[in-house]
Length: 303
Image 1 (cartoon, rainbow, N blue to C red):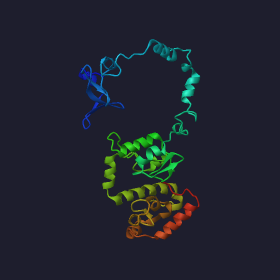
Image 2 (cartoon, rainbow, N blue to C red; image 1 turned 90 degrees about the vertical axis):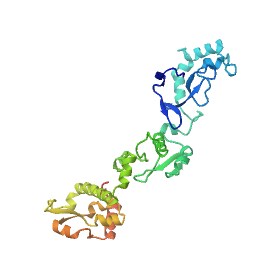
Image 3 (tube, rainbow, N blue to C red; image 1 turned 120 degrees about the horizontal axis):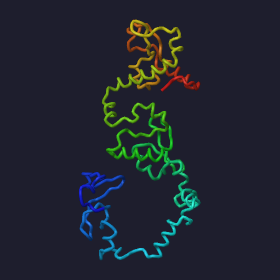
Image 4 (cartoon, rainbow, N blue to C red; image 1 turned 120 degrees about the vertical axis):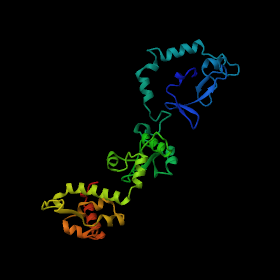
């Protein structure tokens, strides 16, 4: 494309670091045509601004080369004729049908929106856990730890983020379902927000997560935790954690375990203030009750 005025640059984005121009998904270089000398946008190995210049240059291999009349007529009959085989519905279905007889057949991976392990595992294995499942790439969900098969869009977004592409704002981790996305507290956070979370006091973050699960579980199991329906508030009764939040933080106990309903009790205000960070049960007792309910298959705690 020849550049004659500034209006020709509309739609192009200049990349200062590389000295190139970007429009859409293509990268262009500012060059001078080998024949006419005009400036034009072209690819890395482009020499001529258009086909006319390439056909006129004596040093070009395309000089005076044109399609013959027979070739032009064949192309017209092939694509322009409505009665041609190439314009029939059967031929179009044949092109769309990617069966085992097709040279691009890869076991139906494209139709299922999966990606090949050999293509992307080398690029991801430094940052993510990967494995090969009959040629298909599998990764681990960052929230629940489940192995699953990501789609092409997820893998490309993750790679662009790892390559520090400035257009990709967010953490772009792998999530196996929408449920994991909604429950993970770092989902869709920008790099700036992630750094602020890291710099934030770790104990206050841990305490906020425990209170989050405490509120959910108390609403769901209020009749079990507070069977007498005692009023909770200032100068009344308090909702207390049997195994305290501070001890849970010191011993690296998961927030949803400390905030589970088996660890909740109702105490008077004075007794709760005097109790402070002390624990009314041991860590073994907490895990014992927690594991009994978990092994019974009861959906008794809520993330």
